[in-house]
Every structure is written in structure tokens, then in C-alpha cells.
Image (cartoon, rainbow, N blue to C red):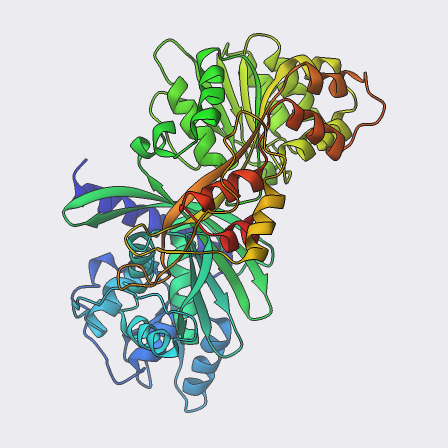
Length: 540
């Protein structure tokens, strides 16, 4: 389908939705397509800024006999319509309002306020205490055309490698922050009228309401073209009502199937061998645990991609779907709308899958159904909220009780974190002081025998060094993994052979079997010069 046809279909959909909305609101609907490019302009009736802010345009200049006519949208404040009507009726004139589509408003508004194509500078992230950069970016973003500001913000977030955009309402302004390499950075303070523009664009594309009084979830895609290359960006949108309006967080997923590859995750050889064993013999259950934003989904998708062959039927149940992958059946589960992972899982098992991914185990019903599936020849992958692999076990036992079936089903638990990676071009080696050496000795004193211990008297550390291309001395993030392979010792707890079952006991048994903890993996990464001890301490 050519681009013109696509645009026509979108416009028709917009007009139909507006007509339905007009009927509900009891306002006359007007299709502006026949005259929006030839409508005589009346620039002296309303100021351009007022028209933008209130999403309203003049249509007909009235007189004693004819009413003044205006085109309003679903985003036009009722209070503004009342004030405008009162203004004209107080001097003996009548006013008539029509509901027009957002597309029609844009077309007419583009004639009142033609877009001047300006190439805006790239956004710079302000360093700590750098108010000048913050002010400069704020001025520049406030100057970006109203129809461009949302797209520009998303494009710049993608260019900077941000994982999230936070749009937050304050009393006097709107704050924009971006999370880059796991850390939130202030980007700009925008005028309040930008809020309506950005939230309006977000609402229409992510299919959410700007007037909702409860939290909402949405999803949208945006095509990004940079340096002659194009990629698809998935955005997961979450909004929540606050004192000053709806705050929004946009989570960015750079859709590129080639990135969902175990070879590109930088996993250590020991951990990789354990994952390869799972991929080579796909059966049983694998749990990924960690907080939001720890890269669980990327690792799970990468394992699925490694399993993705024409010989296997792979089905995922997700809330929402974050990446679309060729060759895999992906099913959205709307848990807010009353659907459950357990019901979805029971249904898909009838489709004879080889591998199933359940977005998250949240309740006993889902846990038991997933366990049942994993002992009947399927590989079941899922995420679970816990701080470590050991606490995941104790939490699962709390959820479903002592369960001999679970002991034979679960094969591997992976706890994961993401920490910022030092920029190899700028990082600086230094000699740690004695207290730091003692801390490292203590942190690594119980390393399993199969891990080579560092020379505690002569090791070096590295610190970040700021540069023009690396404003914080870090570039990207690395995965820190704690992997618990479920052997006979761990299974004893799940079967009920041991009376005293809690996180510390389970961890001691796993460490005896050779497990390396998150903290140990992190400290070893710092000793290799990949990250810093401060970063490890703040994340792990």
C-alpha cells in the first residue's frame, strides 16, 4: 500500500472517531477535508499561541445575523469554550462550535502557523551542576515546532541510547529526564504549554487518554532514520495522574533482532556454558530474577532466539509484548483487563509448543501451571521478582509450598543486574588504598575453588574519566549474573527433606555447589577494569 493511501486511511479513521465522539458529546461534527486548504484565514480573531494551547481555530467571521464559528477538538478545554462564548454573547453576537478532528486542526493550524523547517542541534546531557547546558537545551526544546517536539524528543533519546524518557509535571514547568546507562539525567525544563502538546501526541499514538484519572499503559512504534539507516523503535508508555497532571514514562526498545543474541550480552564463559546446556537440552524450567530494568527480558529473548529454529514451536505470553521476533508466536496478555498468565498458559499448552515463555510469574496459579508444563517435555522460561537466585527459591516455596514436582522441574535460576561499563578509551588506572583492598578481600574470601583468585596485595582498579564523547566516563552497560544450577543439594529443600528452609541456607548450599554471587561477579568485573566498585555497590 502506497504512503498516500496509508495517510488517507488514517485520516478516515480519525474522522470517524471524531464523528462518534461528537455524537456522544452532543456537539455538531464537521469534516474539514473539503475546505481546510482553501479556508479564508482570520488571523486577528485569536492569537496563534492561544490557538495552539487550546486546540481551536476560527472557521467563519460572524456578524449581527450570522454566528461566529470555531473548530474545536476533543482536547479543547470546556472552560475556554465557555469563556469564548461569553465574550461574544456579551456584545450581542452568537457563537457556534464544531468538533473537528485532530488531523483537520493540524491542517488548518499549519496555514495559520506555517512550520519553518529548522535543523535543531542535538541534545546534550548536562553534567552534575551544569545549569548552562540544561538552560540551553530547555530553550532549544521550547523553540521546536509543536508538531515536531515529541518526535524530536524520542529521536534524541534514541540517539543518546536512553532506555527511558521521564516526562514529569512540576508546579511551574514540565521536567524531562532520560535514563542513560541506568542513571537518570535531567535534560530540560519546558514551559507548561508543551505539556499539552507532548501528552496530546503521546495519547493519540499510544491509544491512551490525557484526561484519565487512573494509571494507563500503552504502546507505540516509531521509525527512526539516522545516517541513511532506518530502524524500528518500540515504546512502552506508562502514565499516572499526579497533582499537576499526568506524568509519563516512555520505555524505549530499539527493535533489532540481531541484538537479541547471547554472543552480544558479554556473558562470562562459565555462565554461558550453563545456559548452553539449557539451550542444548530444552526441557524443564528456567527463572530470570531481578528488579525492573535489569535486562531480564533481553536475556530471555536472547535465549529464545538461540532456540528459534524451524523444528521448534515457540510461544510467548507477554504483558506487553516488548520485541516482535520472526518465527515465534507471541500472545499479548492484558492482566489489567482481567486476563491471566495461568489461563493463557493452559490454553497455549494445547497448541503443542516446545518452548513457552511466560512474561512473569505473579501468583501461585501461574507458578503451578508453569511447573506442570515444564515436567511434560516443555522448556518454560519466565521472570520472577526477587533480589537473588536464593531468595527466588524461598519466595517460590512461600508461593506454592514445598513441592516435589518443582524440585524436578527447575533447572536454572539466573539473577541479573546491569552496571555501567567504563569507557576503555578514557578510563584511568589507580592504586586502591588499604581499606579498599581489605573490602575486596572480604567480598571475595569465599570464592569457589574453580574461580581464580586475584592477587589481593597487587591488584589495580580503574576510575571513569570524562571526555567530550563520554560525558560521564562510561559507555554502555555490562551484565552481571548469578546463576544457580539446581542440583541434588538444592532439590532437597524443594522436596521438603529439610525443615529449615530460608534464603541463607539455600545460598550456602548453592555456594557449596560452586555458585558465584552477584557481588562476587561484580567485584571481579571491577578488577578486570570493566566497571567501578562504586557502580557495583550502588547497583548490587
